[in-house]
Image (cartoon, rainbow, N blue to C red; front, side):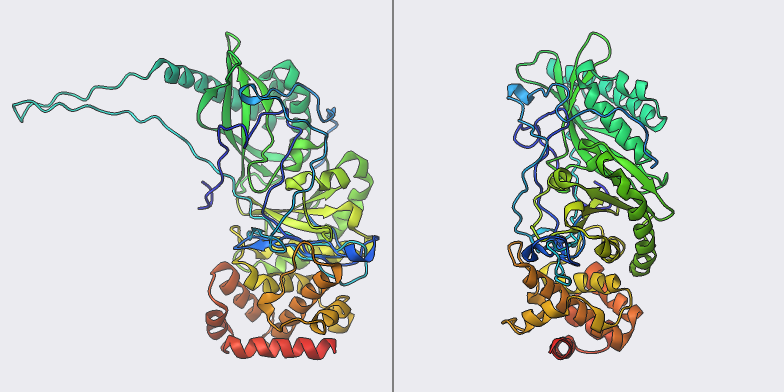
Length: 539
């Protein structure tokens, strides 16, 4: 458990977590995307969805934007290197190197409302950038064997026998012995990673699994890992049909760049082989059973650029994009920092720039077609932003980053309440993305006008677009949300609107209560006032 949030546990069952060599992933529910600026793509996919809010989960936002350390020269292992032992005698899953996108029904689909994703139909770009924040909840269940004491009451009440300790059965005793050995090996490996000792990191592994581990080591070092703790979860279990092999669930807690951050947890299955000495690591599975999905450092070679407020990572093939992306990210961070409504801004904004295969694989893939970027919650209060390299134009990057980083700064770790507040969450991010530009220059006005004149029922709580919605519908939703928030800011000022946002999204007070207490006006009247402003602006 971290930050008071329950985190899904990997089970010993094969369906949820089969061991692989680290090159497979499964789609995960949880984030939504938001459309924004235009993308060089056909009009329907102008936007990219951001995240999908669902009962506190993030929602996609379309955009002209893409949906979501000094790298070391580390040899890279191609996906598929090394054997993939099957758990419990199962056949290993085929790994084609690219996960199929998974369907989402989120809020822009319901994924955990821990985050937000939006799609804006501002510019007529082929893909809309959607910002999605997914509340990544990583579980940590730790089964334990309880010792039972036996108390015998004799005929003489004053005489009580000492409790007798139950002797563990041989299987449990063996599991405990192996568990102690695995813990020691994991601690050695963690020390080696933090110390930059590649040889020591690989020393705990079977030679057949070292290619995958070598890639992970290189990626984590490039991301400047500062905290890496391996916490075994429960006792290891024997692998059926594989004499001398054991499966152990491990919660890894990590920080990048900042040594004293609240670590992000990820629960991963590992497999080990007894050797007569210390057990050797045979395979590591991807964290696909956790809601956030597989992290980039689990499956990809990474190169990284770091600035004072941001870290941007991508694959070696896109290395040339890093200088421009870092400059845009640093500028966006100065804007997003102003929208940290419930505490200090993030210690560092983490941004991953995904090519086509990575977009379909990182964090479970499967975003709506109109998504250009999204933000996903990964635990410890951290959000990671992903941009779609195939759906982002140079002119859209700054606006998309301002939108998404504002989600990372403004949203609570557990996500937001759900669809009724989608307009507020995405509207604030759109407002930050516009960065003070006049309303007349907002590029989603045409789409907002089409939505308003095309049968919208006039309810802000009915704006959330579906994953299958056309780009114009998605962009219109973002546009109406932006205009509603803009009207509130014009009337009450930024700080009072941020206080209202905090009351609704962080404190989870009703719109009625928050409006009365923070803004001093009844929400029913304010809602109608916002809608009237939207209609007048897009007329």
